[in-house]
Each structure stands twice: as C-alpha cells, then as structure tokens.
Amino acid sequence: MPPKKKSKVDSPLIPGDDGNLELDSEMRNPIAKKSKTADEKKLKRKKALSNEVDNVKVTQVLQNKTSTEFHEQDFGNGSKTPDGKKWNTKIATWNVDGLRAWIKKGGLDYLEHESPDILCLQETKCSESKLPQDVVIPGYHTYWCSSEADGHAGLGLYTKVKPDTVSYGIGIPDFDKEGRLIIAEYNTFYLVNVYVPNSGRKLVTLDKRLKWNPKFQELIKDLDSKKPVIICGDMNVAHQEIDIANPKSNKRNAGFTLEERDGFSELLKSACLTDCFRHKHPDVKGAYTFWTYMANARKKNIGWRLDYCLLSKKLMANFCDCCIRSEVYGSDHCPVVAFLHI
Image: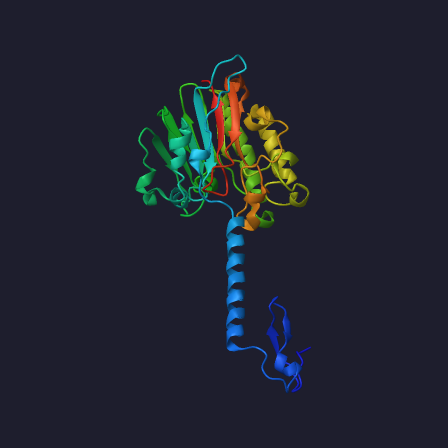
C-alpha cells in the first residue's frame, strides 16, 4: 500500500532535545509568539553538537586496539622440560592478515621484543615482487611462499639458523598456487609452516578443506618417519568447545563444523601429534588467537583458537611451554609461542 499523502492540517515535526520528534510550538498555539529566540536556537544546536562529539569519543574508546605497547609486555619465560632443562629454542607463529598492513601497525617490532628463533607468518597476502624493503631483518634468514593471486593467503618464515633445505607446497597444484605450506628441514627436526584452507562463508569450500586433510596427514606422517615434526600455523579450526567463545551458535560455521574438528582429531591421532597449548594448559578458558574485527570482539574476548603449535610425540621430552600473546596487536590474530630445549 502506498504511503498516505500528508493532509493540510498535519502538523510539522521537529527534533526535540532528546532526539524524538515533537510538534512545532507555533502549530501547538498558532497565535502565540515565537517562543525561541535566535540565541536559544543557537544554544540548542551547540548542545546537540556537543552530544555528538561525546558519542564519538565513547565509540573510539570501545574500538579494538591495533597497536601494541611492547614496553608493557613480559616476553620472559622460565619454563623447563620434564627433566629440568631450560628452554633454548623459541618458535612463534602469527597470522598477520596482510604483511604490508601488519608492518605499518608495528608488526616487525614484535621480532625485536620476542626475538624468536623461528617466526612463521600466515596470510601475508603479498607477492614476492611487492615485498617491502622493511622485511629484511638483520640476523634472520627469510623465505616466502606467495599465492599466485596477490592479496590472498601466502606465508613467510624468519629463522636465525639457516635450514638445511626449504621446500614449498603440499603436492596438489590447486593448493600450491595459493601459498599454503613451507617445510624447513633442520638438523634434528622438520618445521612446517601452514595456512590450512578455510571452509568459507556458508561452507562453500568445505569440500576443498576436506580434500586437504588426508593429503596433509600423509605428508606429516612421511616427514615424521624421517625426523620429528613441529607444525606451526593457522589450522582454521577451533578443536573443542573450550576453544571458542560461542560453540552452540557456530556448529555449522566454518572453523567449527564437526567435519573440520574430526579432521583435526584424526590428524593428531594418525600423525602422533600433540597440541602444545592444550597439553600445557588443558583447562584454561577464554584462550583465543582470533577475533573478528566486528562488534569489538577482541575487547570483549569473543574469539576462536585457530592457531597452533603441534609437536611430534618424539619431541615431547623437549617441550617446555606454549603461550598465547593475546596482548600483542597488529592483526585479527595474535602470536602463539612454543618453548623447547633442542
């Protein structure tokens, strides 16, 4: 039905002080003189503007942080192996959600303060030809695995010790053109930096994800038959209900479907891997590594634990600790750090 036309006797509406609409004073009493002087109207406009400014200030306070106060962070760790050996190797992983934006937010400062022996980056979203000069850091060897489509996926690896060999890809062209896997071979272990495919909004790429799982398991089992394996990266799954803020409402959303969670369980079991963080902190709640940018999710800690350090069972005697750097900003993910004695 089309809207009714306004009749001639309809009274005009104006915004009141509280923002609600009210009848104009002259129409309420047509023979009365104007009740508001020019100064009063000016004061009213000033007051309304002041309220708008106050509202903006409140909104800014509630926004997610994007930069880190590194001087307020404690990057120390006194952990030891089960037989009392202090850690001597620190391995960190971080989905940076765009390398160039991450650098502008002070992301490279993290390297200076954390000083990891190895740093695995995911979602660099930058072709090698477009890498900023800033990515070269003294004391680190760097390796990049970029997607053929600029602005999509991609990996980076910073390492103080030069690996014996570095290889790229899982062996399936559709995945390898996206830049999802780096394997660095060291003297006593393999380091796998991985960005697992996302199942997509409305699970449009769940089949693609399920195609990845068995091939990845096969690769890890093959590597582990030669040397122990350390896997770091964004696995794109919250494994258990404790790993997500709202499990009930996300059971058919990417990252928490039964298919993805069962696939992760099968990886841990078949490849004899341990989830480092849950091994050390089995009952800790609210420990997340990803928060959407929307609705101030990070400030409210409404998140997902999607990023992992996984260890071959053969290395558990070398394991000291694993922590989540939730107060380090610069991405919609935060770093995860494993401490080992190797």
